[in-house]
Image (cartoon, rainbow, N blue to C red; front, side, top):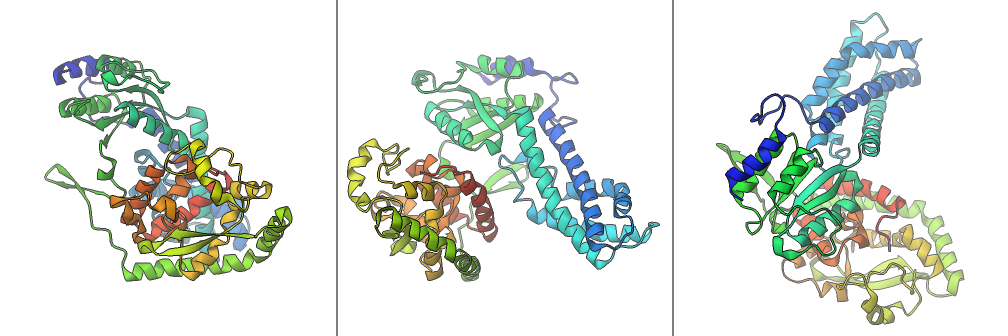
Length: 488
């Protein structure tokens, strides 16, 4: 379809009441408009409660609940401050919930705002805030604002449901995107329709299919689509058609996104720069400096050593349960491939029968993934082992691997020798970092992710490492483990 026909067939179908050709709107789309205001309301309540709690805990005010209301006149200032730090914009622009990404910005905003609040109370007809009040307010505000924002996103998802996404891409990529979004409801998106290459067929895709751009225009016109995603694929759609689709979606207040045909061209950490209106994607050489490695190692020891001390008794009880189960060894030791290809002995609590490794070749015929052994119900797992695996408790002995330096708390998955041999080419660079107990693969879904995508995810981690990224992965591991997501 020519660009002009596309513009006429879709653009005219989704005209806005104010002016049909207006590209720049005067307000956000309905979902984002409501989210911004609910976030602001949640922040307001959180700040008032935080001050009330701080004054009650510090005990410097006779009537802390009444004194807390003196924060209300400062709320417009808090809104402008949070807005300046992007705390109302990032949640609208990023797919992934931004609670962890907002920690730094929220901390700085609260630091500035708390200083302003202290000055404000100097001129109010109530007692001034003392140091204890200020510290307590900052603590409670940080805790409550983050908690309320997370609750707002969760309640909003339950009430509104996920964004309805239409994907224009080859069949295989539509299936991959459908699976990825299905594995992560926190992204608040669901593929509801697709347009694929005409001669591919639609086998295995249980979705309404758009045969042409007229069908796409119809879905946009009747408000069935919240988000249009297009693969940059010349065989499917031209650059002119993509540009027109983007403008059409903007006029209709529909979210628009593209993704490259080659996934490796857009790894995490890529920067967008502009020179006189021309956009560039910048790929910087990955660097893990000696100071960064020292910081990473220091964090490993500061967390692993206390955990081993605290968990010594529970781990002894687990060891006893394994021993009483079948009388076999408590620990399972397996050769894994670590940094720069060096091999080490990874430790786990034994969860399988003693001759489990000898059964791998026979069970591969029933594996859900042709590249490694993944089964819904592995017959080698013992009753005690099943509990340990589902709760990820079997991984605890790897804390000793962290102390020894064989592993890190966060890093690429350490593969057995057999699986490592299947990784070739650029994928070998996943071994440039020390392997970890947890990482992007574990957080994003573990065994729900195919082997080849796991290699890509680990490669992306290695090429975009940051201390803050490791911290986020550690925090995100907690709900994944508690929810048993992707456990095998």
